[in-house]
Image (tube, rainbow, N blue to C red):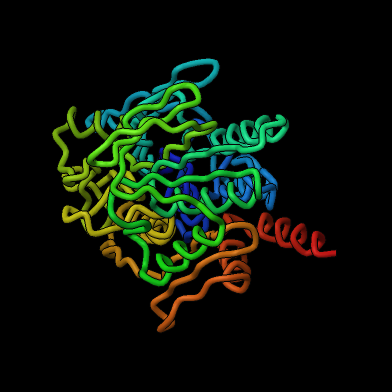
Length: 389
């Protein structure tokens, strides 16, 4: 029996953890597993904020795929996926040296989302390692000046916006003038009420301005134009961060149009409970790229992490002609970074939320256990322990 070929597109939580778990399953004929990503590093996105304040090093939250996959038998291909043919079962990958057409028996789509467009090229996004490094560089340049105030506007009052505002405020201290701009009437609308209260309190303690029911109309050099509903106002600003929403990956949009795939109202791929495309059972999709038809799954790393185990086992079932298992999401709660050494925590297993240093320690420990490999977990744990001395 020839070895089945499994191609996984996207090396985030869904893609990487699916690959790692596939490699550990008891195969009759071991498959050829290839992970394809445009970057050379896995990014532990929930800890990306720690780079802003130098609480963690790049290698801790962004290890190289080559190091993580060493000894697993999984092949890593760095390259940009430019086309997918579901009929021919091929994936076109553009690498630094060539364009290759790879055939597959099973395809996993773990592409994630992309940022919603901002009103100006002058805004900074915060979704990738490059984004975090660019923000760090911009803040360092501003800190090196003699200006008394450093003015930062964060567009978007969701979890990412609140976490960024707290970290930047703690970094800039008395020089910082941080403002959150949110078009809705409340912050953290998708967070549990306990974390919402903790986030609002953390922002108040840091003196972060809140502009609710406010829209960003435009950004120019040194200025941001805001619409307060009944008036427009231009404010001076040094940095504008854009954390407002996301949209489906362009490849997902292309697949939906080209192959007339079922999709959700938000534009992601519609999947069966087994994480398979409705018309292509050899194609699995997870993470932000896919959702149940009713859009009932939140777009979080926690969902992708849980889906990875189901996806790996259902691929095994598909290739062994046995019944797959429907995915059941178990909400475990939410951690919210609230500045240096501080966090909020809300979980259905406790009747109350918590905030402060203890939730921050628990957040670190839980995330340590979620890092991809035991070797990397030990490396990070030893580094944390050594830093206590």
